Image (cartoon, rainbow, N blue to C red; front, side):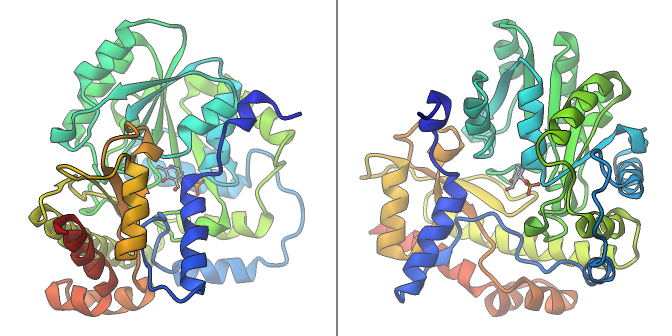
Length: 408
Ligand SMILES: Cc1ncc(COP(=O)(O)O)c(C=O)c1O
């Protein structure tokens, strides 16, 4: 007999759309896949070489992670975010998703989620019988969380709360500025809440100007990062949480959960990840090219959609745009995305997968349907309209098809 918390949960919508697109493509349909948030870029060569060199590593590693990797992650956060973390403050897991699950399990707390938020936070809470409180954002301000909205949600009381803040953001592409983070941090500090700062897209902030929430609220922030997005290695399954000293008991509790669930991340992957977090000279041009391509293609797609009359977020980091139709003849966001897939051959995820009202005609578009390896090879020559037409044509075509779909 299934537990009630499990029976009501459906498979992750991102993985479901992926299977649906694969099926349509197998039947001969040309589907433009803007449904799955996977990096289009290859893993940097020096990181692949490190994995090859460590294929023979076969022993179980320490539950909290390979000491060299924990040190490299802490060093990365010190270099990039001005953090004071050391190796002891780091917990390594098989993707940040698994670590989030462990954190939600370890804490008896309500999750505060800005609406919209990434697809898996709320279902994880449901599986673990934890409450979720959605916090409204302002669509006219790019669906960003404001200090006032956070204050209002916290003023309601209701036991321990964890704010999950994700910047750069999935699904909106918004990257919070230092001033915005500082203002939110002041509210978080006043209420003494725990913040899970999901910074998995930090390396693909489009101008490289990512600011960590932990810079403004170090004592209450757990920072989440990993190889999946800026290192193109989602399938390697490696993530890491960095804890402030004040939250060492939480790290210890999550390490117990890790020891009784996944044991440790695959050894070759951990050895290879050391080279990804190190200050390798090859990483800089790799990230510069990734960012230039993403900024170019995201900006072009936004322009096409705005011209078609949609309300669209600004692509500032990561691979996503969140868009809302001015009106729709479809009864729900899901029906809209079904029609978009059937009639226009464009796969997108409905806003409802991210917490938006079911009837709202909104969707997330992941502008990653292009050959990232080829784009990266040609990016040094400049990312202009000719570049985008040559290397990101499928995303531009998706913009044209969505515009025609809305018009018709
Ligand atoms: C905002 C956000 N957080 C976390 C994750 C999970 O990443 P991973 O488990 O691969 O580290 C994703 C992946 O799509 C994401 O978009």
